[in-house]
Length: 147
Image 1 (cartoon, rainbow, N blue to C red):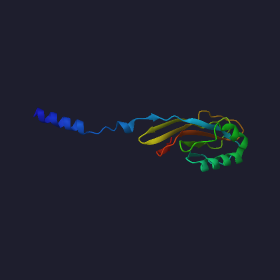
Image 2: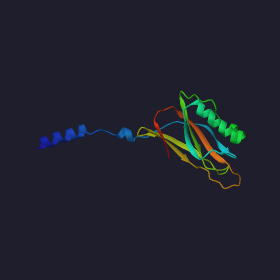
Image 3: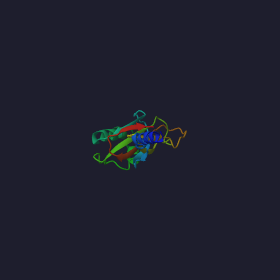
Image 4: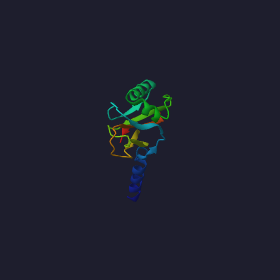
């Protein structure tokens, strides 16, 4: 009887799958492409994934129409190699130039890429502006989830 229980236990132990790979979290390195606040912006609050040059150029054009000075001042990098990278863009609601929207962490878990967005600085001043943050991550076909 003990042998039967031992054999059954071995089959159960060997037969169980290990799903630990789905639960692990891997940090993804990202680079800030630009961060700031647009004055007079008409861009709605949103999060965007940009995977091609045409979409990137259209966004830069729209940002320039709104506030060329602050767009050019805020972008550290404008030439993106979309064969290697994709952009994550976060626009906050109309607020003020002292409030920020911040992409603080990019992780991969369960076959998806999770983007953590926070407001690290909230302020109440009178000028109206729209905070934004743009980061560059390695190109991937995995689904992106904003947190």
